[in-house]
View 1 (cartoon, rainbow, N blue to C red):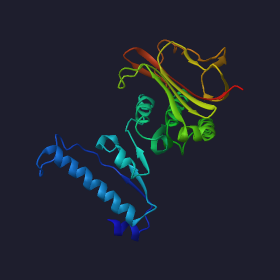
View 2: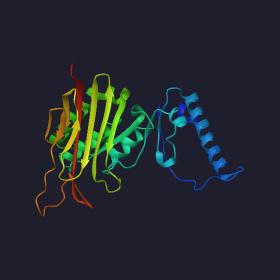
View 3: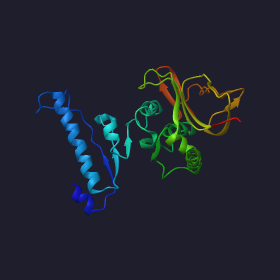
View 4: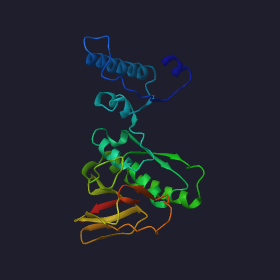
Length: 273
């Protein structure tokens, strides 16, 4: 395999195909020891690839194969951590993963569809801002209005990417209790020097979301919902009820608590002097 990679000039490889080996692997004194030996051999294989192509970019994929662990992450470049790309729970999974792998290694897919309401597009892009943004979906065949919204989000991301990469997580406030049918909100905060990034996701009606920001001023925002920053509070407006009898648009999700509207925003704050 390494001869093939070298001969054909490969510089990027994604290691995928995840399955479970059940309760363990036979061939050793115990099933657990067999599993440990398999993992150890997999790491040796990674070492051989890196020795053959020292500048190879290796994408690790994923938690489904029990591959998000410190030793392996220290040997790879990035990790695509979840298949929840088009699911409402992606920002909540991404926040959890940010506790165990650095944001600079965390590939988060924003799967964007032209049919999606603007609020759904913003929701997906803001989720990807918790790590390395990866774009997918209909990005090559979108309306000019949707392309403009995406470009605005990417421009905001560039302005905060140093906080994403090097900042410290100073708060993850999430009241969602069941990810497969998420209902609630998450406030994710990262700090670097005198600047702070706040990313909010909400799937609930009709509550407003309030974030304490005493001592900070709002510098920049990326969102499609009404907001205000005053008296030490960043307040995102409550959701609007969709008209009765209308089908679910791209920004509304039917759920066990009724119709859940996608709401999200990313905000750059700076300490007041």
